[in-house]
Length: 418
Ligand SMILES: Cc1ncc(COP(=O)(O)O)c(C=O)c1O
Image 1 (cartoon, rainbow, N blue to C red):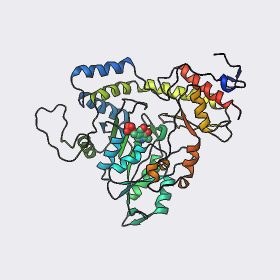
Image 2: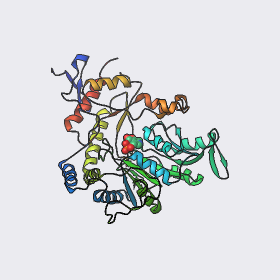
Image 3: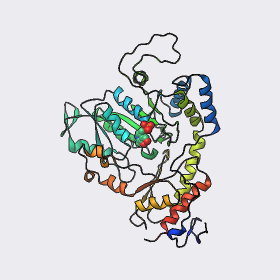
Image 4: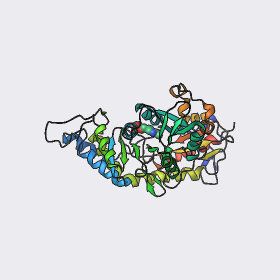
């Protein structure tokens, strides 16, 4: 392909003087939006399990739980097969169920609200902060003041009569919500806090690792996450009694563990779920955990390069990731001043062989939640965010060339005239 005429920007990134459609620089092989970072060590660990004869929950899961608990400073970590399962069990163990209401943000994956529905409770979907896209204390207090009433010290939503029982902050992109402010509301009104930390490993809030702060925290090890096991999750808590119940519920309500059981006897003491993690996933997770610092360093350096490369582009706002963020995503806003709309930007990136994604289509825009009576007009901040956001590829398996291709494609797209 013929090389484009290049100009050099103030940050040293070459970009075309006057690109036309036919002059796009297109990657030979498309860059996916995400790809797990799998080394020979993960392959060896999985192979060891395959040869061991014990594939399901066993010694690897046990070791992974201990190592993960240590890494976030939690007393207990319970491995499950997804964050969705972890959120479900966390809510159930805290006694949330039919007749209860749980507040959560509009900008999240459906799993957050779905976990609430599994318990029989209902989600109360709230708007988010315009600058960080997170659920915050101000929004929760407004909900309590405007739409709830207090009876005998308990809070009920006026319209539904449901009792407010819990708050689910979502650390979107790995940016920790203001947990002190949220916990203060929870303490005042006797509510539980269950953190959706699907994106937030490893992340810190005020120098404390996410995972040892509130009642329950659920992490995801889904294929695109900073620590990936294909499918998988972990729930952490400092509550010993709750931890025991979580262990039981994740495996059919059976008392005690299957691995290491000497005798044929077992006892089902309550209805549980098939939510356990396999040793194959855990073996992979243990290696990923051991490689976490190295992988995070790479992720952070790519994010720093993007920040520097896009700093001078009018029309791109970079969502600020505070210290402590896991930087799971690199999200930008395509502003009004941009020469392209967000949708056109996505198309132009795609045409150059660069995958992008959107985190997230707000819950109330999906048919299922619309049918619950939600309407975009009630979510002004989320609507503005949704119209503008796009997430760029950011993962430790990216090469320097991959990273520079993303930078080039963004700059080339922004050099397009309307
Ligand atoms: C914010 C959020 N919460 C929960 C989940 C569910 O995680 P899992 O796929 O491990 O169930 C996801 C998954 O991507 C997510 O992005």
